[in-house]
Length: 197
Image (cartoon, rainbow, N blue to C red):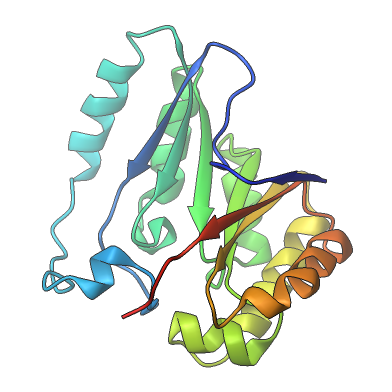
């Protein structure tokens, strides 16, 4: 496991990686999310599948692009997420997913892998359900995240996670690191959040 203190999307070569927020929709209400804290939480407009395909085709013209990270919002809320990953793979670009993890099922993980996804990045905001769920705003989300990590541990997809360090969660850093070890995460990265509203 690598412990990073900077961006989890670090590249060790000269290739380009794109982080693409493919939807503003989300199934959580995180206290540290700038979008959720804004007055525009209700915005749900997103690109159509065809519009996304056109962008992928344009991006693929740049041979320096090595990977596209699909994020949001929650990218797994898109019903076309598998098709989007397949389209990215078709252009010899690696698709990856950044997700809160609570929608991951065995079938979805298999479908994502078959669509070319070899890396999924999760979000964890505490070493306990109490802290994680207080920051995420969804009861039961910690248990669902742990189950998702177990599913991914038994899949061919590599998994990493980000831990948002706040004054509410800083005392649980060692617990989060232990979870990362127990769940066989390949990366755990830390982001410092100065203040929550």
